[in-house]
Amino acid sequence: MAKVSIKALNTKRGAKGPVTYSYRIYPPSGAHKGFRIFKRYKPSGRLEIIKNPKLELLNKSLAIKQISVEEAKPQVENIRKELYALDGIVKPEKFLSRENGLLLERYWNATYTNSSLVDAQSAKLELRRSLEALGTLELAKAKQTDLQAHLDNVLTGNKHARVVNKLNSMLKFLNRKFILRAQPKAHKGIKFITLADLPALLEHIHDERIRTLHEVCFYTGCLRSEATSLDQRSYSIDRDSIRIISQVDKRGAKKTATKTRTTVVLPEGREAIIRWFATRGHLSLDKQLKASVYTRKASHAAFPKNPSKQITFNDLRHSYAIHLLSQGVQLGLVADCLGINHRSAKELYGEFDLSNDSISYITRVLRSKGSQIDTHERTVSLTTEALVAEQMSDKDKLDE
Image (cartoon, rainbow, N blue to C red):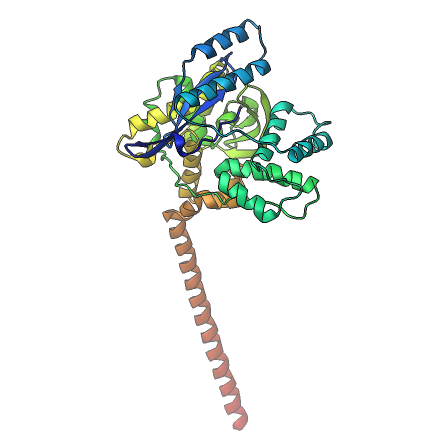
């Protein structure tokens, strides 16, 4: 289930500015057989698990199969509403107009009925929530300016982008001759660690398998989901490269990678790759999903006075990219290794594109070419002078 958007009513003033929170529902997955509710704080991202007697009773009923997961979802949602009510937060009710509801059914039947979806219910729910974001506006009749202004007013960030993407698909289905615009992404500073910083980080991760997972992602630029699906067949020792063709989702199922590609293994990471193939199968799904918790704690312990090195798990991937750039690798090749397009790479790593080594190399090339040009000009000049002298000599002979 998706996170509920909360208004400013749940904002409190913290030591470092405003702190907001929301209750998030996590459905059964992996080792967790029941529902969990977390209180998530922003901007820190800290999660606090909620112990609720009603939720515990509901999970017991779920464990002995008295009710199904689908039957339990509305009850868990009611528990979340009660938690908001205890905090004095009034959650606005969602509204789906009759016309948008009919559009949803038409679009679903025409587009998804014959599709083989892994989770059809979640897909339809996401479409419904996209239409609910419009409130009383009708997607089939409202003006582009009204739709755009309303979405820009009520949504931000990734949620805005997801809703716009779904609504644009429905606009195309309706043959409306315009599209809605997603908000430009705000550029966030990249955090990274260097090759020299890595041992200090690993020193504070005591689980050997989690530590090896961190090494693999640093040395290859893989996502966590990609690293957990690697096997020996994907690794070319001769070329120090890994072929990424699959990834593991949050439920532990193996699926085709978002972008099949080949990535280069840093020379320092060969041993870690071999160790990973031996230990990968012994790392539980629950620990894989909690890898970011280990990263956050370890980086804070290793670099307590350097916030720029207090990284998340995904920043290991940034660290790999920036290491390649610092060695003079072209930005386009780095993008290929990460499986992203050049534009995204430019947005993320543009400021790191030209390393000191790269600048020195370009300077040497330009200077060497400059000296070649000077030599060429001198040669041309001398040749011209010789030709003129020869012509003058011939003229003098003719005069005689």
